[in-house]
Length: 271
Ligand code: ZN
Image 1 (cartoon, rainbow, N blue to C red):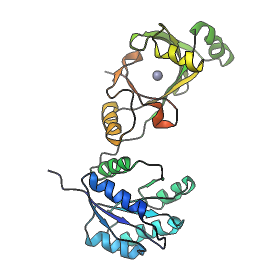
Image 2: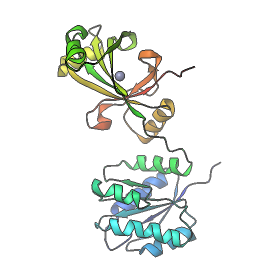
Image 3: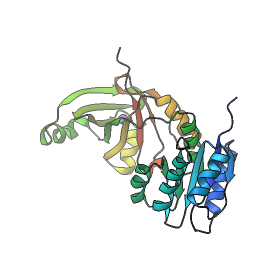
Image 4: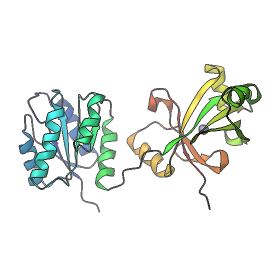
């Protein structure tokens, strides 16, 4: 059996509120981790020493005071001075998105904004410690566009934009005809419903023609779906199904991404 992951949750600096840190600590315990909480107002050196003494696998910093840009990198430095730079540091709290690139360049492994579900943080820590962090999707595989009729929609793509029509294929599982137009590394897919029950027909009835989904190319679709399920990401498909060109595809629920429908797409393995 794997040893439980040990996490030090710390609040560097002067801010006096630790409700968020306590919620995270409890969520990580609920996920089977051993959590040590340092309490309020710890200096970076105290935090680094506690991390070493407690022999933790990861340090989680929380900051609400706005001082994260100076304090988080100081904790990274203090760990390095204790010869413990192998202990990754993650951070969260009230942190504007603008500050994330700086913090990650300063050696903070990952920064979570306040909207991150606690289960997603727990899954991230497990992946980090067990070295199973998934690689990000490789590229936008295609953008799916719902059209009433491919032949009517095609002139804009073929003639106005000058793109080449690669193929038209029927995907019976989705009850659609699909026209593929390559653009750089990606494609437009024009999706025409072939029956009243087609999801594309329902989309057009509700919202009219237009952008239907964005598909991301991945090479670990099953693993990724399992991880998303564990994190509580709402999914339309928990298992991949067959898409165009014998690819494997699955859709996330649009509520996962602020109303945008994302598809994961793993191309057929070339023999
Ligand atoms: Zn698609």
